[in-house]
Length: 225
Image 1 (cartoon, rainbow, N blue to C red):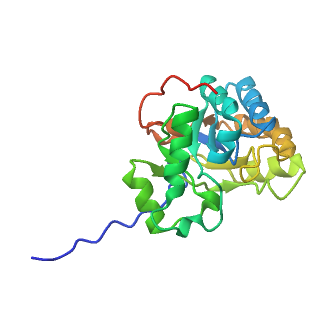
Image 2 (cartoon, one colour):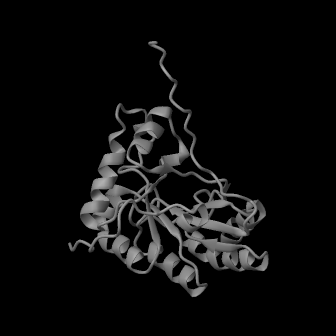
């Protein structure tokens, strides 16, 4: 009597089972004008759909890009509202509610996946995300594409580190800056996709890779500006 059961220790998902020869290509920090839709064009030319973890303030600035991604069959995940470094320590973690509201208002979606800025989480943040029925998803492959403008380096790093079940993170934006330069990532993407195919690795949306619904409810009719 009176014994308190400890809360389960939550951790972000970083990969899927290595038994499957599939991976997920995910893109953070957008939407970005024009690089996000250029990335979508390349993915689609290879018969692939990606997962875009979008920043709320960028969605508010470029809602049409986010809606276009959904229309074309890509998956949206939430990536905070403002992409601040210290927001993860704020009581109640209001960043989650803010980005969810922006996505509902401007795009008509309620993502099931959340990715914290810089991949940094606390148990408080993880509890808040889980309390909304969402999964926190980070990655196990990064090319550090924010630190180089060399497309060959981005492609080589990505392919070297990728294994079956990997969740790969690249960047279509710059901390929610809707006009940041991500041309090197765009240029690297064809080589990445070709290299994955040569290894027999199929790039999938994150919901397909994890076997978990990508949205908490059916996608609503998309809002207009």
